[in-house]
Image 1 (spheres, rainbow, N blue to C red):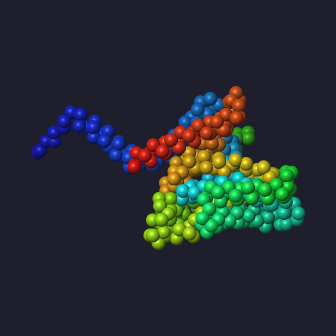
Image 2 (cartoon, one colour):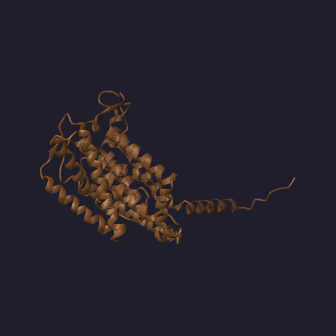
Length: 349
C-alpha cells in the first residue's frame, strides 16, 4: 500500500484556491446572488420586525399576494428591459407608452368598443411604439438613448392630448377581469393567497422570457449582440431582426403592463408610468444584468423587481421612515450594484 503525504497548510491553501477559482468562474453571478441575499435578508427583517410572513402561528398569505399583485406590471416591464439591456441598449419609453396605451384602451372602451378588442389594442399600441424605436435605432442609426427618449416624449405628449383627466374603467368592462381575484389558498380571515389573471400573465411572461433567452437561437443572438454587435454580424447572426424584435417586445411588454396596471387601479391617467422606465432599469441592474450587455438573467430581474417592491412594503410598515426615502434607498442600492458590476468587469479584464 502506498501512503499519501499531507503537508501542513496545503489543505487550507487548496481550499482558498478553490474558492478563488470558483469566484473567478462565477463572478458574473455575484450581482444576481447579492440581489437574492438582499431579498431574503429583507424577508427575514420583515418577519422579525413585523411578522411579515408568519404571525400568530398563521402564514401571512396576504403579504405574498400583495407583493405579487402590486408588482406584476413591474415584473413584466423588467423582462422586456432585460432583453434590451442584454444587447447593450436602453428603453426610456416604456413608462410613457403605458400611459398612452392605457388611456387609449379605456377611452375606446368607454366610447363603446368591445372591451376584449380594447385590451388587444392596448398591447398592440405598445408593440407599435416599440417597433418605432427599433426602426429609429436600426435603420436611422439613432442611439438607443435618443431614439427611446424621443418615443417617450411622443407617447407622453399623445397621452396628454387624449386626456388630462383620469378615465375610469367601467365596473362591467372586461378589462376588470384582468384584476379578478383567484383564491389559491383560503387562509384565516382575509389572509388568503390570491392571484389575478394579471399576475398569471406576469408569470407566463417570465417563463417565456427565460425560454427565449436560454433555449432559442434568438436568445443566443441577444447575448452575442451584447458581447459585440460587429462580431455577431460577422458570424452571420440575424442582428437586425433581433434588435427590431427586442425593442418591439419591450414595447409590447409596456402595453401588457399598462393593461395589468389599469385593470388593478381601475383608471387610466396621462401621468401613469412616470419614472417607471427607471424603476424597470433599476430592477434589471439590481437583478444582475450588466449595463454593458451580454450578461444577465430574466429571473434575476424578477428578484430585482421584488426587492424594490418589498422595500416599499417595509418602509410603509415602518411608518417612521418618510416615503421619500424609498427613492434614496433605491438609488443607494443601484449605486452599490453598479459599482459591483464595475469591479467584476475590471477584474475579468
